[in-house]
Image 1 (cartoon, helix red, strand yellow):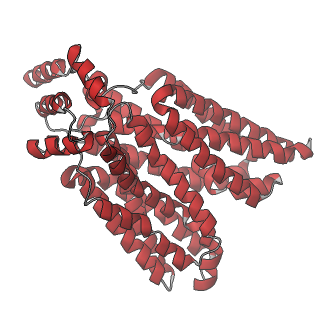
Image 2 (cartoon, one colour):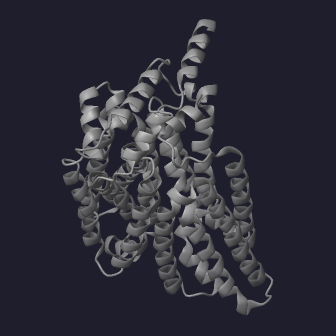
Image 3 (cartoon, one colour):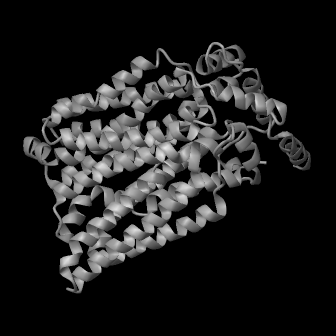
Length: 473
């Protein structure tokens, strides 16, 4: 044990911030070039994010039609809706190993295959059992996409664009949810299922024209393929020698460490990155987002505000603010946006808590609808600008490539478990105390702010190798 610890300490001392001085300046000069291939590759990848959103947004507008056509009870439809999350948890567990074994592109192909199969099964369903099987399959694909898309985009992007490009993952998710809600009110539920095949078709076609992640290729020892992929992404005329050397040196250093297993993630050298990655997922999900998101119409109705109008405003605001967050993440930084987002989440919960406190105690009832609307809009706007996207961005940045599969799968599993727990308990909490529910969420979001201040580093403007060396040394 002593010999092993000495070897590991020696290796960690060699993990350094590479390319300092004149070499770093040359790399910065090269990184100012933004070849179109990076944008095209990102577009193809985030089609998986859009598919994620179609899975999440499908059940809400189709509930009445599916129940009527197939004669489902409320309990049977509830199972259909919630089984998506269980599929996503299975997908989260397996996403890291699949992405490590078959590559990022291979994982996206596997995920697409499950989604295509699931949608076709849903389209041809004549009863609850095949409907649930199809939903479980799409959930599995969604769980894999939730991990592999932000990781792939982070690994291909230049450092000064990494935040904005990775945030497109969340933007495409919320856009797809909103579009599904709108067209789901005018299209039959079977036809809506077929439209959900479109993003997977675009993704599968696009995968033939984009390179694999250079960092994954380097980890697999495929030096020529790694350099070729990096050259394609940076442009034919770009000098990739310094960036390639930085990546290769870091991969070589990591390979000298013992092979990681699940228990290794909790050893000292990885403990900080694992704590940050899992902690941010807890902050994202346990602050109430899925309860509020899934039951927005019910919240508006209880507060006396039009559910239809409120939901439309909610969807539009979510898309716009997520886009604003994507535009500013590489300028303002991850941590300031997270703190701004957390503060807004607390404020939104307080507004909603006050609204329901007034309603329960029959005080100032005329103000209840406006306060509830304000609270929900402040909440979702704040979530969209930071807490929605940035935990995925940071997760894709902080884990070294040798543990990224296992650590990323664990963080994604925690995220989906939190999503299920929050959505499952929301109605029970509201029956217990409507204003108490929002006070509880406000307290959790306040703790999230404290966690961000204490534990989360700023990651903008650094290469993945520089960042991971600093955190995991």
